[in-house]
Length: 113
Length: 116
Image (tube, rainbow over all chains, first blue to last red; front, side, top):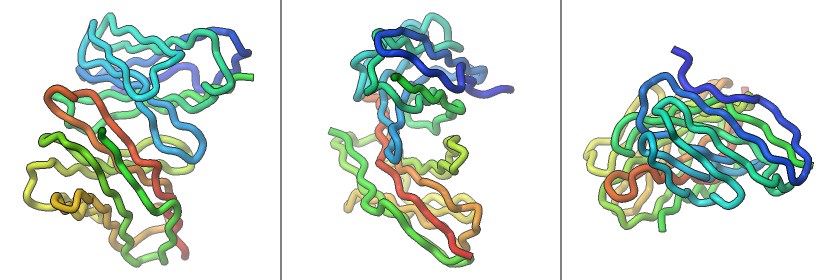
């Protein structure tokens, strides 16, 4: 049981490039989340999904897109990377109807230069 | 709007002593959950403890307890008998049910340092 896995662990992007952060969970959780964590700060919700085919914006969605075609996968797409997107990105999943502990992936450290 | 406030950017505690990390929240939802997570310097997020908005008793998990005061909208984490391995960043978080299910909000965290 791998839990929540994220790839890559590290990435350096040039301004204007695009990339997809991958997230997979094997716990059959309905809910999945993407957060970003800037240095010394808390987590900010980018997008979330309550099930396959259903996604919604969180607090800081600008510059990102998501899709949820399967229960297991929830990729995050960065289009036209900007230095302000330099951050650590966490994917998480949870079971149940919203009020449930979240299981986090190890994070992806992204630098945009 | 839903908001979590952690007013202590950094805290120090002597090994084996107890420490309280503060968390206040703001929401108009009736059904919500409050969580505490630990983030060591290695970066992973570790779930510690949960309190539901309808729970009448304070949650406890080993050395962790949650002091839930609903009227004051506070959900403080108490760590008893601190250990050196407790040195980490601690986040208070809130999640919701019903129409806001899926939305989560985190505080900015408190860095705890345990002194030997």
